[in-house]
Image (tube, rainbow, N blue to C red; front, side, top):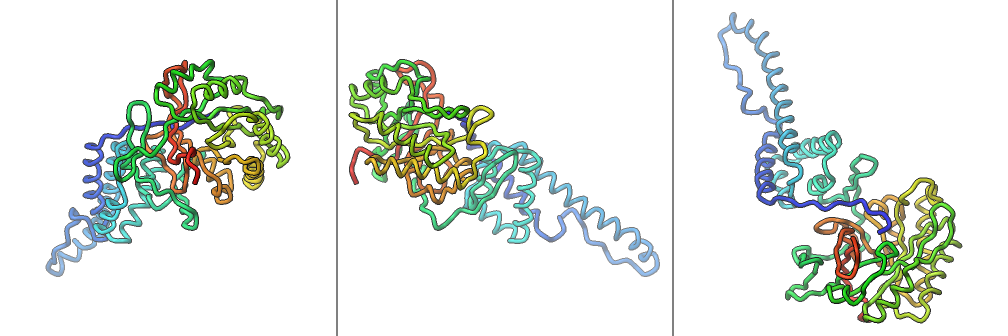
Length: 382
């Protein structure tokens, strides 16, 4: 939204299949028995045999460990060539476990972690290797976090997620589209022709209401907000709004929410009112020193104020910020809008909207615009 740093990646299924087979074959050599190229010593006659044993045993040990070391680097080299195409799922990982046994698999997994640390492969590779963990990359390090089983998970079946023309669509088991296609905009999109936008398939829009300056703390109404409110109203496009927060106290968070509420008087809002919380784009942000607990407290204060005014509160951010910079379990009682620029979202917990691109092209808008899919129809009362 105001900061975007995730990338899309296309993957070759044929290369992935070849690598999958190669990994399974290579993994089998990690058994605790000696590799096949270490041959057992034959029994020799006494006398001459004693001298040969003194020489042969250390030599055999050297061959054994050299062979294991060579095997290790063969696996790592193969992974390094193919890491962009790694598509291992839970079932395929189980095949490795069945093939090698638990102890060997543990060695293999540690080797993969070391490989990831040494080569800095893309995070999608490591997520496929560790499907039972929440895998993040922060400050150049991979984190393998446990998934909290007490929290609500999303139940989306991504085989039903399909990109059609400009937008992603999500279908139910009968093949009916049950998602909504939308955009989010601010003054950076300039003058918008909302008639052309609607004709291009946009069903909802999240408008930036304003922001708090990350340096001076001043509250600012987005200069195109009122114009966008009128434009969407004229074209009967469903709207929500968002506010980019830089609150450093509970009072400031409430002040931000009240500013949004005041700006919305007289307009119908069917989608959520969103707090945008993320890493500031410049240095010297006033929120830089906040603890996770403080940041969470201020987000909750904003949402509670919005909810008390009769709107649906929502929290927008990316995976790393939500998990590492907030007490996400406390925030998860509110709807989540996830920013994750990829071919499918990566997030185990429940979320309602997914921002999948910052490079969308929509008729009626000059330049790039964020694209979103909403898995919930907010226009229907529950």
